[in-house]
Length: 196
Ligand SMILES: Nc1nc2c(ncn2[C@@H]2O[C@H](COP(=O)(O)OP(=O)(O)OP(=O)(O)O)[C@@H](O)[C@H]2O)c(=O)[nH]1
Ligand SMILES: [Mg+2]
Image 1: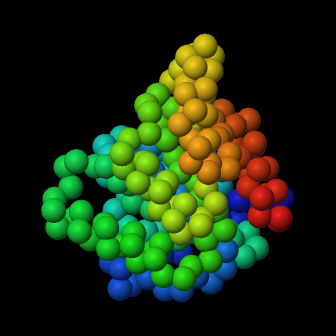
Image 2: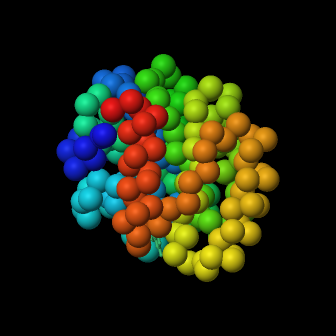
């Protein structure tokens, strides 16, 4: 089992030129701004202040590296689909992403976070296409499930199955930071997948 409590913050990079080669296997967290990437990292690591969280979208603007247990590093990406970013900011973001995914990296798995209440957006589908193009295994994490009741959630799950199965999604996992059980399930699945 991966001991996520061992996770610490290493570094943040805002520009493509700053990126360094992978030092071990990376688990990368991507998704729209506000989907809950930073919150999920904090939750599974049992640490409140590891990754910065904010109620206003666009909090994470850098790629953040969190070395964890064994040879695993968690990578928190800046969110996409945040309309208020300027043209210059968008350019910096695109370059950062292209360099991250486009250079040889040791990416073991990507988690694409999707707010369970909304269908995947064009940006989400672009990100998923990216994963398939680069041959990166990805799981969809349906976040903020505490916002829906059981009936609503089961309808949403079916909908996500329909949309994502044809897109090579290896797993679809519901998640909420409000429930320890959902964090434990995710820790277990990640540990199994990474054989740690
Ligand atoms: N109710 C509820 N709120 C959540 C959950 N996960 C995250 N949030 C809230 O959603 C907001 C955005 O969370 P972040 O973790 O900052 O989202 P992010 O994907 O890292 O966003 P960027 O850094 O902008 O890309 C915050 O106000 C969180 O408290 C959840 O499971 N349930
Ligand atoms: Mg964030």
